[in-house]
Amino acid sequence: MARVHRIRREMLQRRVYKTTDADAIEVGDLLVFSSSTARPASVMTDATGLSAAARLVIVQDKVADVFLGVALQGKLAGEVKDILVAINCVAEYSLNTAVASTAIFTGEQLEADGSDNATTGTGLTQSVRRGTTNPIGRASEGAAIGSLYVTAQFRGIHADGGPVAD
Image (cartoon, rainbow, N blue to C red; front, side, top):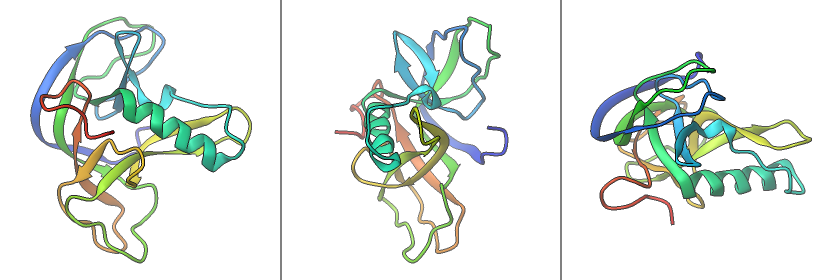
């Protein structure tokens, strides 16, 4: 995930969460709350959908329901330690593809994005895309046509005021 662009701009709320030894977490990873621990959103997969698009929607829904926030600290696989998580923050993230025909406007909803391996599931790629079905954040600044990045406000399920997702 080192090639994924992510820059924290403003942190509004943060909390410390436990992790498992199974996951490596990089600073800036999108995280989910699973079994009382913080885990990378990329661990969420689905093998039940009939197509890649269907599996992605199922995974996005799972992530939106348990979205925690953005990792402020990293850890190696094999380590069990507490990490600091921004549960309400503004950050710049990679888009899944360059903004095409219509710019992203301030306030538009954003979803986690992923790719499909065509057999067992859809893994998220630590990037975001425009989407209103399973949002995890909103664009806090617009992104022009051709942009590869968007500045977004992410609000996790434990942020004051509740999550962005339904």
